[in-house]
Length: 222
Image (cartoon, rainbow, N blue to C red):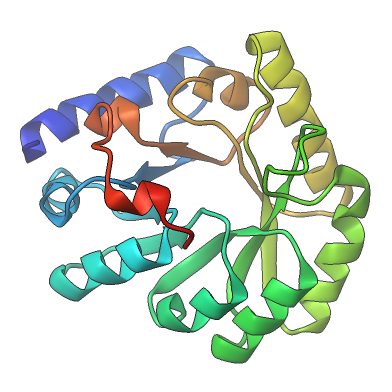
């Protein structure tokens, strides 16, 4: 995909944000490049995008090794502690911290790192994230480790816009209660719901790049 196509897609995303009542200049746009090749990341940088989200440690490292450009990497996937070392020199924002042990490893490898606490808005223990009632304790514990807890992140529960908004509202209210500035909620399918519930950052993949290719990493625990 070339830079002009990605630029046009990004403008459509910003139009969606604006039409939902948000300010595109105030809501961060994280381009999710999971499954897409390094050439797509280069084209996205040429299109003016600056922030990129990756789910897999091995994929992030591989792309960073061949991309020498001014960008910011966000780690947005579930992370095993033994993978922190490999990506710590690369990550600007750890978006999916959901347990203290992971925070301990991040603090050891990248002191004072910027992190978001991931909230699980479902009853599915297989989903990443801590339960809303445990968020305040985790935030406090991460701060005790010297980490810069900037906000919360979540994936919407499956359902219609009303369901998404109800979940996102929990995140907004939690963030407000803890005086956390960032709310990373909303993806390609539900960004309007997130905008209406006060997101400060959306994580967008398919709306920018189309369906992602299926890679071997899809079947590998990272």
